[in-house]
Length: 337
Image (cartoon, rainbow, N blue to C red; front, side, top):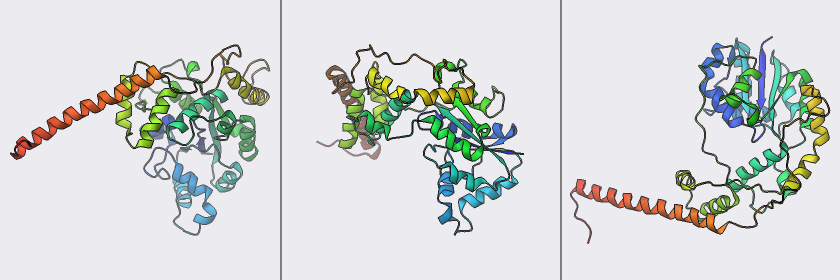
C-alpha cells in the first residue's frame, strides 16, 4: 500500500528548512518514489493551505471544488508515495484521522522533537522579533506559546494512526555529523538513501539575537524604520550579536524537570533506550551557573548597534545624493542652489 507521509512540523525544529529542501528537490524526490505535491501549497513551500482546508472541511465541503477534496482526488491518481508538510503542533489528530480515513493509503506521521528548554529559547527569540511576545516575558507566559509534553502529543497521534505509524526524530545539530544535517536525516526518515544530487537550500537570514539586539529591533519596528535588508546589514557589521538566554540555568533546569519522566517514556517507547539514557543529549543546564538574564540592553553593545545604524544611513544618504546628481545630469537639469 502506498504511503501518505504527514510531516507535522513543531515550531523551531527545522520545519521551514525541511520544507525548502522538499520544494527544491521535489523532482528528484518524485524520481525516487515520493511526491511532494504542488497542490495544497498555494505556491509556497509548505502545505499550510491544505492543512487549513482539512481543519475547516465541515464548512468547506459545501463547495464541491474545495481544496481538500481536490487534493484527495489527486492523491487517488498519484502512483508514488505522498509527502505533505506544514507546522501543525496544535493540530487535532482525531480530526486528521477522520479526514484521511478513506484516502486508501497507509498514513505515517513524521515529527522532530527538540529539547524543551532549547526550543523554548529559540521560539521566544522568534516571537519577540516578530513583536508577538514582550521582552519581559515570564517563563509561565512563554510556556503558553506551544505544547511541550511530547509524550501526550505522541500518544494522541498514536491513538489515531497506531504507534508504529508515528516516526519520531530528534532535532540535534551536534548529532548530525555529516555536512547535510537535518536534510540527510529527513531523507533517511522517508526510507531513502542520501543522494549527492540533492540540493541544499540557501540558509535563510534568521539569526538568534541577544537581548540588546532584540531591544533595538523592537524599537526600530515600533518607530517604523525597520526593514530586513537594513537590519541584516547592521547585524553583519557587528562583531558578535551574542546569544543571551532568556532564563537562568536554574529556571531552564526546573522547566526540563517537568518533562523528565515523560521524556524518559518517549525515549523508551520510540527509541528503545534504557532508563538511564535521556531522550535528549547533554550538556544540560548547570544549576551552579550564576548566569542571570539581562534586565536591560548592554550600553556598549547598544552604542555599537546605533553606530551601525548611523553608518548605514550615512552611506545610504551619500549614495542617494550621488544617484540624484546622476539623474539630474541625464535629464539635463541644473543643480539646485
